[in-house]
Image (cartoon, rainbow, N blue to C red; front, side, top):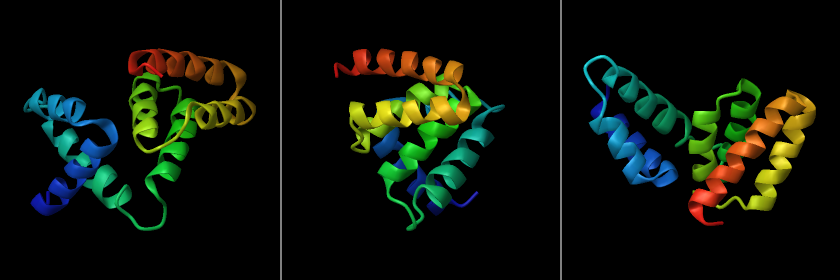
Length: 125
C-alpha cells in the first residue's frame, strides 16, 4: 500500500461520504478487514475517484445506477449521501432512478427509491 495514495484517497472519501462515516469505518476496522479498507481507499477513492476524466457529480450518478443494478442498498444509501454532497439534486436523483427502472428492472428501482426516501428524510431534504 502506498501511504501517499491512501492519504489522497482518504481525503476524497471524506469529502464525498463525510468524515464521520469514513473515520468510523477506519476506526472500527480490525485485523481482518483493515486490508479491505486500505484497498478501497487507495484504489477506489484515489486511483478512480481522483482520475481527471469525470467530475464527482458524474461519478456519483454512475454509482447510483450501478448500485441499483447490483441491488446493494447499504452502499446505495451511502452513495446517495455522497451524491448530495457532490451537488446532485433530489430531482436529478429521481431521474437517475427512473432510468434504472427501465435498464435494471422496476423492483430494483423501487428499492432504490425507498432507500432515497430514507436518506432524504435523514438529511432533512
